[in-house]
Length: 312
Image (cartoon, rainbow, N blue to C red; front, side, top):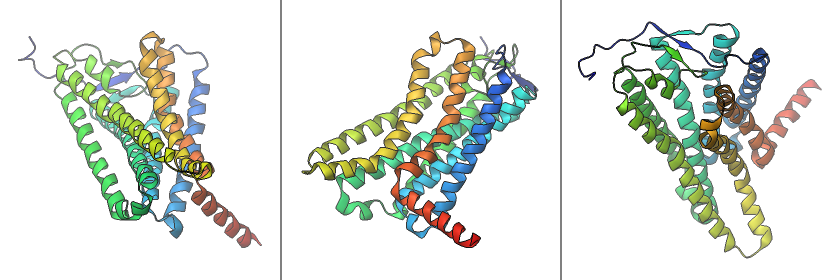
């Protein structure tokens, strides 16, 4: 029906989330505070890893990457959300909207894939402790992280590229808090079937396949821990995984809840839930690593000790 349709690309879209919520400016202030805290926390983690030689290990390449992605993700999302809704700049140009979408989904992709990298690191550390340094070298970890970046860029460029074949001849109002992929392709006048298929493939690739890998990883780790004779040794090995397990829970649990109950949620509740799902993990991730990881705690103590000596 639409095969011969001329592609209509609007001059701008209108982002229409958070409408009709009383005192919503307090929520935007809350998001701003979370954003500032997340940038400071993740900045500290990245600085510690950069300048402390004891943290120049394969595991902390993945931790650094997670902190970097968290800063990038919140920086791509929160300032624009505040500008859009707090200052009522709801119009966004076509090209800026697609760029906005790319960076947001790129960081979501990398957050999920980075949990795969960290789970791989823990799997080898627990199941093959004597071969860990040989299998998980700096080169291996750097190559793995770089490969995931390349994959993430390619799949998200494909998703954005497919949006450019859509024609927008009716509404340009996006019912979300950012240029969201689903609401964008649902506005199209021509067939959006390729976009729907790709969206389902990407959801599986970005969320469910990594989650399955992490679950299988911990089944293998559990089996390996069961073979350790002493309870004290099992607890020590388990503690090395505790930070990563908390990261996985913080990232995936809100997403699973959103997917399970999205149809029953009022639109504004769903938008608030989705925005918190995006903003909270980058705030909590560095806290988990500072509190749960002995190496980072020791590095932070050394920094405070040096600062104290400088003051004296």
